[in-house]
Amino acid sequence: MARVIVLATGGTIASTRSSSPGATATESIEALLQSVDSGEHEVVGKDILTTGSYLLNHRDLRIIAHTVAEALEDASCDGVVLTHGTDTLEETAYLLDLVHSSSKPVVVTGAQRTPDSVGHDGELNLQDAIAVAGSPESSGRGVLITFAGCVYPARGTVKLHTTNPSPFGGVGACGYVADTPSVGAADGNGSSHSTKHVHFHAFPRRAQPLALPDEKFDATRVDVIVSHPGADATAAQACADAGAKGIIVLGTGAGNGNHALLLWARQAMESGITVGLATRVPHGSVLPLYGNGGASDFLDAGALSMGSLPWSQARILLALLLSQQQVISSDVLAEHI
Image 1 (spheres, rainbow, N blue to C red):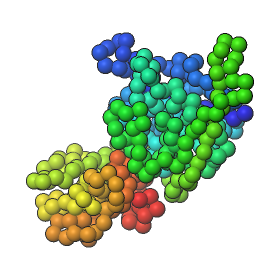
Image 2: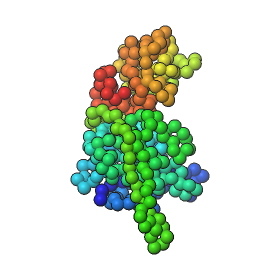
Image 3: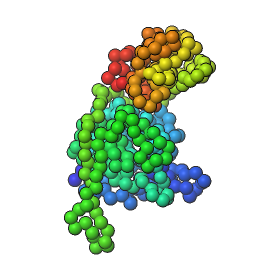
Image 4: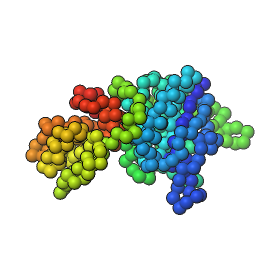
């Protein structure tokens, strides 16, 4: 029997519509676990936060990261599940993976439909996540995301649909959870039971773990600006004036900008601001294919390529690194992108 610690932060899986026209996070982890069949695993729950993930800030992410690390240090713990809102789940999961130094699995999950909605999905997602966290097959795979029966690596997984019950994708699933009916499944009440089996067909790509975020992370500002037809440097300069230590240019195509953004980037880097170059395209990598304001010019000027890392996760990576060191080199980024 595996012992799984379930940590809760809120999100749709813990939200109801009873108090306002829009759903808000109200349910504790104790309430969530009452309706969940944990199978053969021993489950212990703890609330960290009870809020929508669209409200989280860097301080919240730091608290989550340290709470997860503390749970993993518990010798009786075999795995950790984190319930989380889907809006920014990809950022939190990636931060946790960046600092994950244990062989024990951490599994992040949530819901797209509230518990008081028809066809709510949180209960099944949580059951699957507990099964993954308690499976010996999950050992050494870092931080995973479990949703709608699929298991994804934290790095590269992003939310691709606002409301679909299976909203995540990107690099693709590395495994899945299957239900197998148990022999003599019906109990005295006529209810059926099943056993969850966790299957993996790929091993997530992972880098050497970084140090846990400290209080400097709370105030490390990294902003994102988007290149588009007619874009100038107004938004980028506003971010710089607001105190951003890093700014990611979300380029078109393989990371292309334009002359106005390139001029601004050169000046920003001269002033000590770190400029990262990502792409607004869902799939593919930043590549120095074009000059005349394209990615080639940005990289030659000293901008850091964020490779194939989704911009939301690239921002988290830069923020963590900038909170821990003043200068980030391409070599430091290489194993992460």
